[in-house]
Length: 204
Image 1 (tube, rainbow, N blue to C red):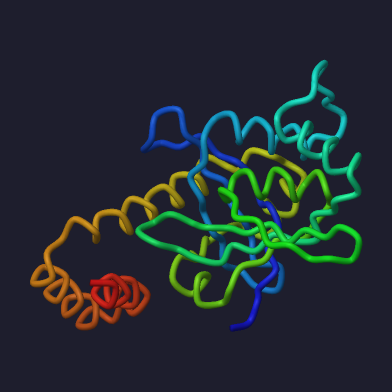
Image 2: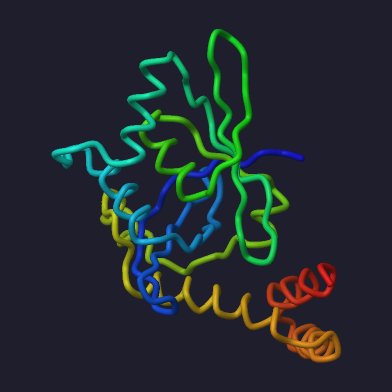
């Protein structure tokens, strides 16, 4: 399976889950976005790592991990989001010490917070991006102006939230309802929606 490189587009407050945030990852050589729901602490840690000028008075948990790794010559070479199960993303840290590579399981939010601190690239597999990636209609000029902004535009956030809610809603449907929705989507030529419903049926 081929790997696709991602970068961080921004962080948005989640409209659907109280106290949660949506981390938006962007396909480097494409237009798809990968929205991932993360907790407030992880969102803060990622935002601080993105804003180079912000220095917390005491090290946060991810800063402590970085200091610990530096002291023992451990390097995080890359992060791979390798699995998606029931809306939950699973990630691995590819680490190296004394030219020996180790793979460590990690929550995706923690893995990305560490990737930023180690300046390590973030990847996912093409099939995960095909399943969970979404296209957003954004004004190119506006997107260029906001390239350095940590918080994404509210309109983009709403669209991401709507897509996330739509994906979640399929999980609550019976197989019979899913087949009916699939037929409707195909008849209306909404093939993107049909693909999502088909994926949900396949998972059953």
